[in-house]
Image 1 (cartoon, rainbow, N blue to C red):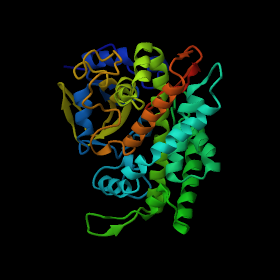
Image 2: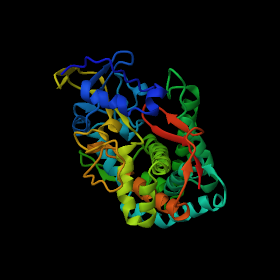
Image 3: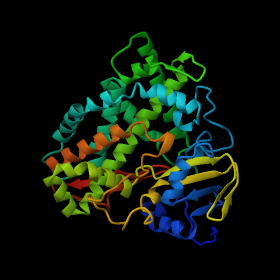
Amino acid sequence: MTTSTDVTWDPFDTEIDADPYPTWRRLRDEAPVYRNDRFDFWALSRFDDVEAAHKDPETFSSAHGTVLELMSPNRLGDGGGGSSIIFMDPPEHSQLRALVSRAFTPRRVRELEVRIRELCAELFGGLEGLDSFDYVENFAARLPAEVIASLLGVPEQDREFARTHIDLVFHIEPGVGMINDTSLRAQITLFEYLGAQLAERRRQPRDDMLTGLVEAEITDERGERRRLNEREATAFANLLISAGTETVARLLGNFAVVLAAHPDQRRALAADVSLVPGAVEELLRFEAPSPVQGRWTTRAVELHGVSIPAGSKVLLLTGSAGRDERKFADPDRFDIHRAIDHHLSFGYGIHFCLGAALARLEGRVGIEETLRRFPDWTVDLAQGKRLHTSTVRGWSNVPFRP
């Protein structure tokens, strides 16, 4: 099979991004190894190919960046202490993931359920009785921002500041994507703020994840005990607060939109909350919050009769994989009763999302609490706004009418 096709997928084209699924279906059928010369990347769109690439970090490296605008021949994850864990390969990645996993424990996640329900009550408290409100701006984006900030230990008076700058990090501009002055300034401000918070935890430890990040220890491959250095800890805190906000905000925004379009399934969920965990997985498959992940080939790859050279940018289309009919029957049909053995919306392999359990918990509780208060609703998509980036996809505004 060759990449000869007249289909074009442009990750910065907002018209395509509004409904990429017909384009991605054509890629799967006509060009499973797709070449885009304009932006100098290859793309894999079938479930099995995307999964296999996630499971082969030696060939599909994260060390050159995982966002198209950032990818280059220069290694970002060189173990020098200033890079995020998502831009690292083994052995640096393995050491760091083991280290930070001790700060991100199942106990901490489990203990958050009561607080998440309290936050839902607080956020919805000022909305009940209104004729309409913005579901994302007033709830879906605020809930995960509060949860991850609380888990990290960001002081309550600083949480709106942090959420605002996270939003600005994902600011995009035509032609340059997220590489723009607004986004870069927000990244610097957020990084400096988190660095100052971590320095404070070194002086005065607390019972929070920021303290866990500065205190956790592990034995590396040389048999030496070590902790995260200042830049490693800050980079990881920055990843957690940003990714921990964005993924769940998009998941819940998608829930409001998709279930408005499927009132029968919404009624089923409201009547039986035991169906909600399965609905969360189906939402993640049906509308992946992060549908594109970048990798860099360390060797030439032969796939479907096409050779991808070493040193190439390869985009893994997780969002397409979730709609691959080779894996999922009738994939464009949303079905809360669908049995899913696994999907790729949290990644796979060594870069599987560390915060997946927390995201699932927030999604489940947020959906349950929404349905308890608002068993019926409509959304005004004509007035809604989408978030368009090369790696995150979803709604930034959803006018919601109970």
